[in-house]
Length: 141
Length: 145
Image 1 (cartoon, helix red, strand yellow):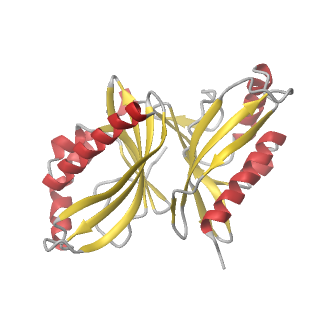
Image 2 (image 1 turned 135 degrees about the vertical axis):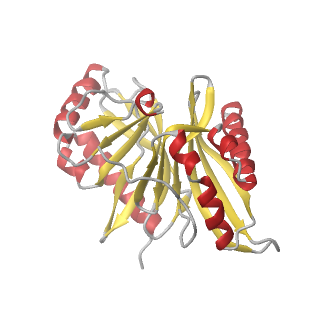
Image 3 (image 1 turned 90 degrees about the vertical axis):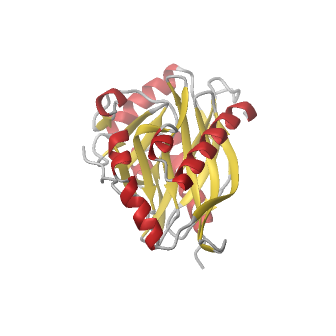
């Protein structure tokens, strides 16, 4: 389990660094699509990498408008791991430039190994009252 | 005073009891729809409860074929808890009639949501299941990415 979890944790750390750098290409490189998120109790989806990529500049502006400077990962724990899927329990902290936290939240990330590459495919977040899920669609079938 | 983690665990335990009884109505009473599942790396979704009865008939046949008798939760741990959502990693052990583990253990992340006065499983049971079932939609990566 440790080795499997380590791959997913490394993937998450690369994604988090890309998020803080507002580097859409690097974020997409650590994701799988369709990409699903359960925000509160509502499903959101980015069906393609293009859907996610296209809105990141807007997301950056919205983050700036709420005073965001960086998101710090306070804890990561692998709670379930298999050869092709890992569940990571994560605590995140959105902070201002002076290092004060203005929004801390729990989130569960599910990483899958597809085509030999680990990427996040599903998230369930407790983030509230903050910029999130820009460009996500409500799933339709 | 409400305790979301306790409510979610109790909801799961009622679901598991219904699963072992092969009681579809009992299982549906503990679920929310749309209901999502990530099986391997494919999303599956049921828009409504319609089709679940037929699905569970197939599940019952498959379980009998593998010698299943009962499933038991050997660990349940609420790892993240909010007033309307709980993350529950669960490890289950499936056993045959003799009580020996004849099939496999499975690890699943259940995400019960709390709506109204109770908790229900809404998302992400990572167990393997049959495909091409009534009411089931599967997103294929090749069609979307």
